[in-house]
Length: 94
Picture 1 (cartoon, rainbow, N blue to C red):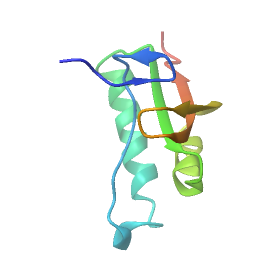
Picture 2 (picture 1 turned 180 degrees about the vertical axis):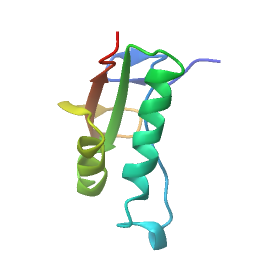
Picture 3 (picture 1 turned 90 degrees about the horizontal axis):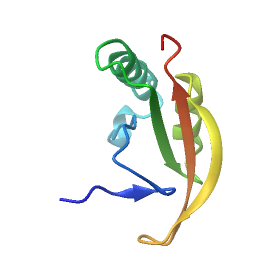
Picture 4 (picture 1 turned 30 degrees about the vertical axis):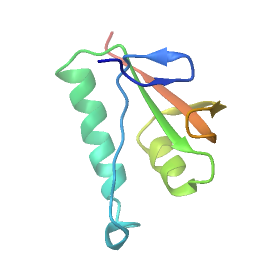
């Protein structure tokens, strides 16, 4: 099975979350994102973790920045005809 390709990358690790609206704005995305990044670096020994958001989703943009990912660039995802934002964080222990 082929993995999705985003921003010319395939088979990468990314941090993400899906919350139903009643759980928005409670810090759950930030806390779960921190735990996921920590697990990726400490347990899986990953070099880099990526993230992506829809360009208009400021809440997810802010959550990824809070957990330490750096905004890299915007890109177009033709499969869904949508503009996305691309983020990355490097493992500081490697």
